[in-house]
Image 1 (cartoon, rainbow, N blue to C red):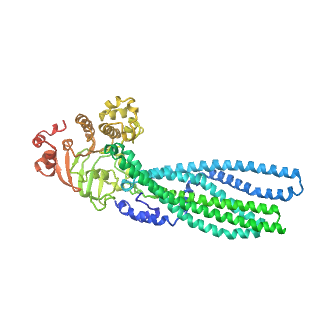
Image 2: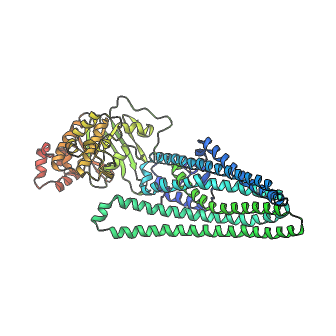
Image 3: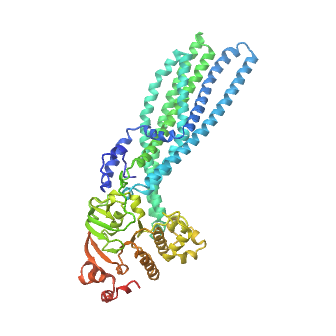
Length: 631
């Protein structure tokens, strides 16, 4: 289940950009859980702005729906006149006329029903397409802090299963509910007009029927929301397990995965069964009460016909209207449960839409200097990840990078190296201190403009289920063919690309599964080269390459580094020897700074790391021959 549940009203009282998003996750979930039991189908009202976009479709559906309902309500009047007048005079022409009229009404009803179906189904499909678009577009703007505490599979479940639930409600259930509501109200009105005495008996029973429906409807909605959340959790695990099939099979974990998924599915089934039981009881209770009242009315009406105070045709008309009202009310009891389910889905989707984007552009962003220089500065920066608020990943960090300088950052795992890159890209904002680019505080700039000036090769390369060309041009869709090929050549990737069956048009599968680790990394390097940004961030950019490929890619990267500011994160010290400066980090701060030779002579943390990585005689060799370290 997702951890973050928050309404827009709540978000107005939250500090923005403080890095504390994860600390309020539990409070948000608790508040949402408390709200779940109180609401009915009001979350569906949040879909009204979408309906307002398509007034013609709504108008067509309403006209067709009212026409069908009015046509249905006209049938009992024709039946009464035929019974009271047609049979008494044995007038065949009179009967023929009324039957022809009934055929005409049936044709009109069929046409109106077909038209209603077309409009409401089209409207449902259009509305759900818009909701999916808006939810996905908003989710892509949320900061990584949101995804640190939420499962992507659960979000995908909301985009698919929940929107399908809404489509069913808007495209069919809502129109059926509205049709039955019109029929119910119209039938009650005609019942009162036909026989006020018998109507009083029916109206007296309505509160006994409606109030339990409302009460049980809340229970149905609460159970439906629980079932949807449980199913989403199962979907999230399935997505995660399927995406890691090779790891799962390599560790012979198929049985454990099956057991876990089966348990999640059983939980979802149990929650759904609870919702089904509630809906079944609701439906049975409504039908028993409604048709019981119809039988009672028929009994009293039959006595009036025998006494001569009511004609047989009038009783027949009243009975048909009572059946219409009862059937409509019974149908409403069924669709109420479906609307409650859709309301739960709408609530879950609007929670995503109302989730505030913590990292946003200020109302009046400060423009970054043109042309860009590439000067970076960290000034006493403190930062904790929202998912780990008690642990400082960066603690009083201060350093500067001059334009065009290549700075390597090394240190043990957990020292905060990769966090620096996340802060530079403004995936997060520091809790205190500031980060500047060309003298401008990143929080004062537009994040989009900032990121356009940065190209990154991450440690965990992302390759999409597309062609090699599309992957290289990701983020630069207008790049020309020659520019794409030049980037691939610079990244030493063209050789293996041309050996593939379709060359640059070769699909690489989900997450680039058909490529080796080194091939994926070279495509990511080509992607960064193609962007041609003034700042280059390399996070273990050659970690998946063999020695020969690493040497070639290092040469390609060196050509890129010469004209731009470069930050290199590395565990393998042999890859950073040519950096202008090396920053050594420990516990979130810089503890040493200098060139390779000066740091070796200092005999501190860097020297100890070097001794762990190189041979016994390697220290003296590297100290004397640093240029050969990458050979």
